[in-house]
Image (tube, rainbow over all chains, first blue to last red; front, top):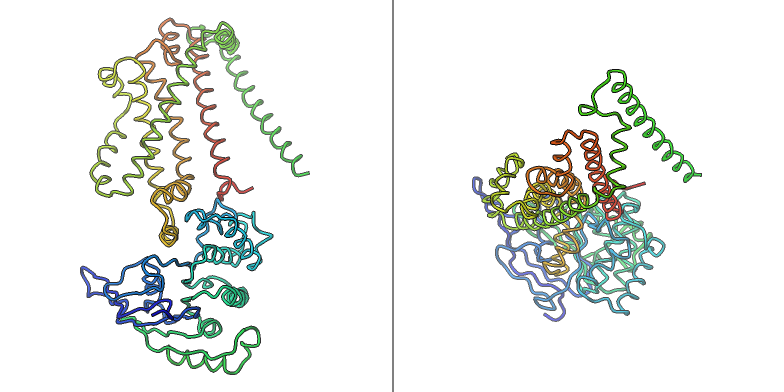
Amino acid sequence: MSDYSVVLKNLNKIYNNLLKDDTVALENVNLEIEQSEFISIIGPSGCGKSTLLRIVGNLDKATSGTIEYKDGVDQQLGFVFQDSVLLPWKNVRENAEFPLVIQKKQTKENEEKLDELLELAGLTEFKTALPRELSGGMKQRVSIVRALSYDAPLMLMDEPFGALDALTRDHLNEELLKIWQKTKKTIIFVTHSIEEAAFLSDRVVVMSPRPGRIKEIVKIDLPRPRGEATRNDPKFTEYSKYLRGIIG
Amino acid sequence: MKKNHKTNNTLRGILEYAVSIGIFLLIWYLYVTIKDVPAYVLPSPGKVGTSLIALFTKGTIWVHLRTTTFEVILGFAAGAFLGIILGYIFIKIDFLKTTLMPYLIFAQTAPKIALVPLFVVWFGIGLVSKIVLIISMVLFPVLSGTMLGLESIPANVRDLMKILKASKWQLFSKVEMLYASPALFSSFKVGIVQAVIGAIVAEWMSGKQGLGYILTYASSTYNTPMLLAGIIVTILLGIVTYEIVNFMENKALYWHESKQI
């Protein structure tokens, strides 16, 4: 167990409907996620990938099955939503600092780390800006820094770049990899973009809909650090093609 | 350059306002003089002005103004507080909302003025019956505002607080109240106007102090200049208290889209 960050065993999620047949959102999901692994979950909409992530994040309850975290029930985790969910009355730094305030961890060391993270995300100049003054990409950077601020070893990301334009998205993908390499987090990343999944991940979990289950797990064997060159790598194109084939 | 433009606009606004009031006073004056209207029906603006100044210089108004202001502030604060608490409880406990809401709507739609004699019977002619009336007028708008505000919090924000393992108090004080504040301030603006109305009406019915008392006293003695002067003071009190709430809103909601410059 010690090598794994999260282990999912026989997870099922069933929504009971009064008038229709029950909806099986997840069926028998088994997954072992290693420490410091970057794992993506892709599949067509309605395949239960977001539900799965929410269950891992304790935002939803599985109907049956177990989840074992490395740190047990007190597992700290960071969650990045598709929408940045910044508090509109707080400026960039206050938003990023918010978890430290809530968890009463405003030590000097943590504050310094936070400033480093803001620097790493290119937000230093925008520390005092309010969310309404930021672009979508900027907001999502703040949201990621916030999720990292309290140093949770496990990061869950639910289509964090889904609402951004392609250029910003590519750019943020590369930045995310940099942050990941530096912080050694375990990242579970839900996306509907095949290229994004192939570019970022160590492994890509492909799910099929109704009932939502794991169809195949593809190991992405591309060299790291990845960057512009990776996107031009013929192997990258092959992986993308292969993944597209499975999803069908 | 920009600031200059802004002051010019403000000046122009004040000027237009002054001209408008000037024309109104002029028509009033001409009507009273030409038609020779008796002063107990409609006194000239000059007489009302004199009476108004006399109220302040002789000092008769102060004690009444103080009484009414005190009632308005106390009643508003109590009504707003209860409205927020009830709104919060209704949102959290659906059962209480469904069981208690009909009574509140019933109480809200009943004409409050009709309840004043009842409040006098129950709570006497002192401060309590007046405060109860004001609370009954402020509570409902604030309650609705609180509920609307709390219901408009994005679901993801609650998820975020859950992820951060925030306590119920942290959720309430750091997120819910702030998200609810735009709707709350809207309801405060309705509530403060209601509070002034409530105070005046309550003073009509009972009491020997307050602006409402001045109005009934002036009316029963056919002192129409004083009556109109009293009405003007009442309106001024309404405007001032409303503007205070407005000012607080502008300070508190600096972050809100509606305050974007």
